[in-house]
Length: 245
Length: 247
Image (cartoon, rainbow over all chains, first blue to last red; front, side, top):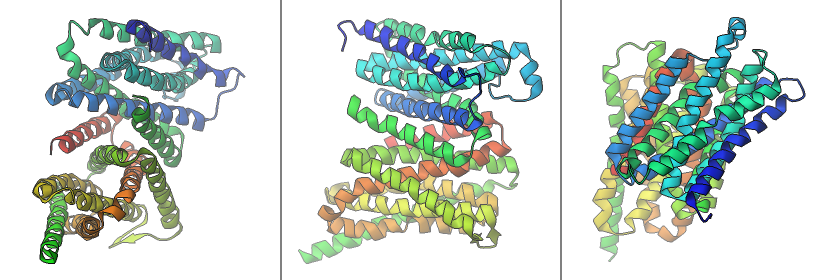
């Protein structure tokens, strides 16, 4: 694809982070999109992450089941820790939450910690095969758009302007290229850890979907819309991989 | 020659029957579940969600080996089937035994999904048997063991709604009866059945995934914290994927 694999890692993981800015567009007119669109954005991100998590997990299982399971458990613990540590609720719509200025910072911190796990996912996929990495990066790029739509919704409720939100959406995703590059660069040193890293990424992605994105989605829309979006996108990621990789 | 075919047909049916009966074993863990609190219902739903998501990922990949496009078409049909089923049952008073309303509707839907998905599994068994009798025992053991968590998923939905263990086990076995019934014609007419297989596998995967996100997960989130649901779904999903890969 590119002469230097590391350039592909840099390019596509940065692209994923940059595309997050598109999630701000629905807010430019000054109005907030209807709740069902936010729910749809969460559902889209969920489906993509579930699909990506499945791909990484199955690639890992080909290499060593025990390491994958241990890695996945660590990934779940990491995602659990984020939730406990930040205590943030992106979808907390209570009035007192809107007045809590600290909450906006917690949201950003939470997003950055999520992006770190997503960066690991891109990195390990790139290590396996550049094409798979590009595929995962593109899936996460679309996911970033949905997620930054939800983040902008949360930030705008706390009085943060759209242009600032745009910067913050991209900024909180910077851990994606950083971690992707770090994982890719460290691979020769830590090659034995690859199955565990695949498990980690899969566990963290799936747990984030189940504890953050899906509950937020179900609060805002009917199960039918969510089920359609999630099953279509997750299925598309799993089946499209056959075409791309 | 014809004797050989007859005895083989008998064997395919018998093996299919064994796999169906194994599904009933999935009801057994619920012997130990005494209280049916809202939180237990949520956990049972989360458990069923993880098991069904894991099962459908396996079906999807199996289908893609025969034909990705057909699998996708089958998946869309599965989703449409559940949507139509919901519409149909929403219009009338659903009843399941003494149970009425939303709970009965969910049990009916999950039984319909699991039973229909057994048709394609039965075809898969029959087609696979055509590959050689040596593999037969291995395939049977694999399918039988893999049916147990499916019985677990059905029981996880039925038991908290007040069904008896016998009913859970009975309906679990019922949901797998299409396996021996379909395995025989699929074995005899492999050429005719093989092209249909990816549609069937995709259908089953689409219907199961849709059911999880439409009914099971929202109900789980209602009565348990997101963390509890997340832990149960991710561990049962992981266990199911491991299970399918190594058994």
